[in-house]
Image 1 (tube, helix red, strand yellow):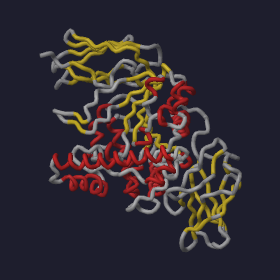
Image 2 (image 1 turned 180 degrees about the horizontal axis):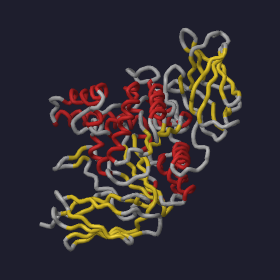
Image 3 (image 1 turned 120 degrees about the horizontal axis):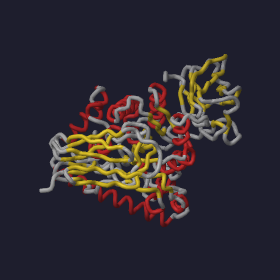
Length: 508
């Protein structure tokens, strides 16, 4: 029998290695055997223990394509066309997963996609794995150079991000695509971090265990097959409606036909189970060296919207521990507008979750937020225009990580003061003369509250602040902006970035 000897599946031809840091290279080899790695002018070695090895390389600089040779017991692995640059994980759920070929501008973008210095790695979407089986039985991933052939099935958001970033910094960019539609943040976290908070543990771990208690594999398979049939029938209905009404947008189609049947049944092999994809996908990447995490997720957690701030904070801590970087940068996308009218949802659940996201940005260092309200569609949870989202992520990375003085942040609520019958709103990330109304009309989306409920408010820009009032309210107490699942708003910076939604009656 041949001795075990292989690199982790993250290491393939065409890979991008993170520059300017000690690099982790790991895999499997016979216990006690010597493993040696040669790359550039470095040669490093170690002795395998418990059939595993980990070698740390000295930092590498950006430069020409490299070859890596790994040797053990007269066997060797050669990897070619390696470049050194900056590596990012594109993580989250369906709107990060959303493929370039489905994007509104995707066809044109794919035709001109070739770039030797942008490379992708799609982490296989393994839903369940044990010693005897892998479901689905996907092959390991491989790094790919951005081209017309490879880009079409890659994340649209991540592609636009990488393209905008490369055009600015001119160094190789690697994207590790680790996401899957419909997933809660709890799917991407370890049980340890899900257990730190009693409320999160109860809602995400204990309720799952209760749901699958006594569930047999036969019963789970039967429920899954029934769901697949329901989903297939729904998709046929969607396709027929689109064929009969070709002039209608996806948002209009969804409004007419209804929501996708969701969620699929819970089970021990369900990819929606807590910590499931953490174990079958994310851990395949750890501890590959990365520069930052790009995160676009939250839609699935609107059903527990008030918990999202705590859940997201724990996820960030979890990632930082796993990637051995307590200052690892997180750049995330705040949920866009969407008219979620599903039964059982808390009113304004998307607005509440956005508010929780803003709170996380405010309270944790090295966390930044892309405002994407205007990138949503009223009745389509998967908006088709991803370019603005990807490019806004790139702007924040260029500003924060590459220290370039560019307009990267949306106007973000800072504080308020009450003067007589008006409320004055102050913003962060706003320079003199930057606030503007996008369409030149009156400001929209502001509400004001006296002693009772919020009502529609008038507003205008004055000295880089916004003044909010309602003539019928003489003693205002609070203001909120864009604070609905779906609304019309038009407060922007002159750089074309929308102001973030907020409410003044909470501490951030």
